[in-house]
Length: 497
Image 1 (cartoon, helix red, strand yellow):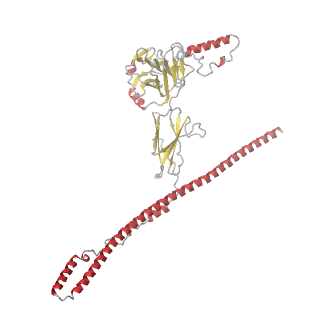
Image 2: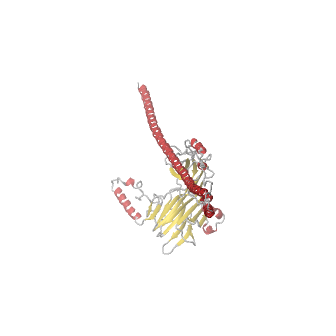
């Protein structure tokens, strides 16, 4: 009986799920049907608008050309009317003179006849009939204003719906990832002069290969790209890869997206480890600031908690001291004394990496470098054989030095606003740069035998950290030229075991 009930329950559950699927599909079909109706109405309205515009242009052209014909007609009519009037006047004068001459032939008196003959001669000489042109000034030909719309008619008859652009093709070989910028290059599979612009979409991901349907990152869009390449700059590479896809758009419609392309954008991303910093440091993800009251205030809180614990009644909040927000620092005893240090939360075990640090203008003293995990709680960066750094001291007078194993080498150069740190773990190289000009400040050459942690020391001031940065191209070029030329690091070169 129980087995039959269980089987029936499974059947009911299966049917219910199937019913939900069918209902969802019905909803999808209904939504699609409404979309077809609405979109059909939209495209018909757009078609009417296009033809109305075409009719309007034709009407304007017809009116303009008709006016040209009428103006030509008026001009020719006026010329012919003028010429006709002149000829009528000349004919009237000529007929009058002819009648006068005929009457003069009947004059008998020789003197009067001579006088009439002279008058006729003078009038004939001045007669307009002998001065007018008997050729029409204009012709009645209007063929120069005739039109032939046979080609245009063929073009109009060839009108058809605008084709959907084909999907572009991204060329991974031509794409470039460098200096926290990505240049995407694509081409059309065939020439299409109807394309107006392109749309590029991208998103960050930690998965190699094609984009995943349930990827948590949404696509970001860049519209109205006129060319066939685009550069995204100023990126933070806080994921291992980026997906890209592009589609072409003409005046009315967008085509299908290209096959997505995944490019590697791997870079070192880390935060400051606020669980291991000195109590006198106020630490956020990428910022650390000297806090002279932090340690003392927290120590009093810790003592108060401990006294309550000794009274025999356990404090209800005692167990939460170390698990609460980093602002309660009772458990932070990784560094103490004058080791005002905080480390990064991500170890470097291989590869080439780069990050940058900016100090507050009024910062009195700070160090930037790397250290092994076993750096002692009282140790300061650069004063042990397990840490390397450059140190800036603005107290009383400015000093700038590279430090390792409690040895220092003064650096005779201006302290930059931003310091770039380049770490080649496998190549055993740690270099510091002016992050703005990419001037090399100092290079350590050694053999790293343990994982490294980025390290920072600050006193009376603050440091801001920038990660997710690729090794800049300028630094790569400088490293190639510097390899084998380690003169700047001679006095502090050390092979650490």
